[in-house]
Image 1 (cartoon, rainbow, N blue to C red):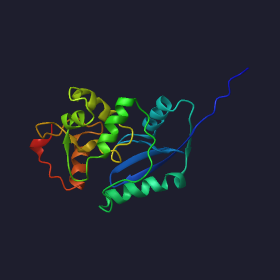
Image 2 (cartoon, rainbow, N blue to C red; image 1 turned 30 degrees about the horizontal axis):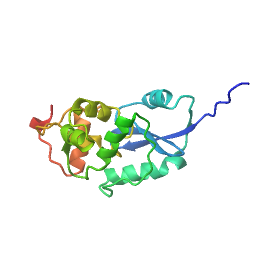
Image 3 (cartoon, rainbow, N blue to C red; image 1 turned 180 degrees about the vertical axis):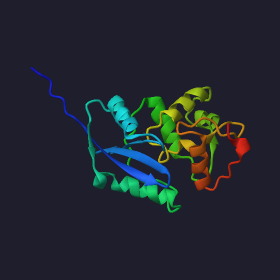
Length: 180
């Protein structure tokens, strides 16, 4: 007997914010992906293909409206905490890291070491960094709020300029000397 495969619907839309274009995707369970500025729709399609095999991708402004609204409010200084549902696709370890990131308050930063200690894996600093890079919903899950133990800005999938801009939106002064 043939196995029936149910295809999952994934809805997407684009949010233009100043010079940035972000592509967002959501399932029935919540926001599952946000590309970073300067990524393309192809970047989103590749992520969906790798993490939600067989997904049917559909442009749907209405389905994404709650997510784009919250992001616009954040960029306009009207939102400090996201309340939208998320559908985080990753390993158990990654999800633990991402949940810890959601607890970092707006306008504050923590180090990779702080996150590793919080999840009970103080030696897993590099693994925390890798989980940060794999975060499928940046900004909403604020991986930009994680910095080096010495206070420097360290790697960000979208580039350090994007990370610095997001921190500055939250009132965190970032000097050129703190960017590495």
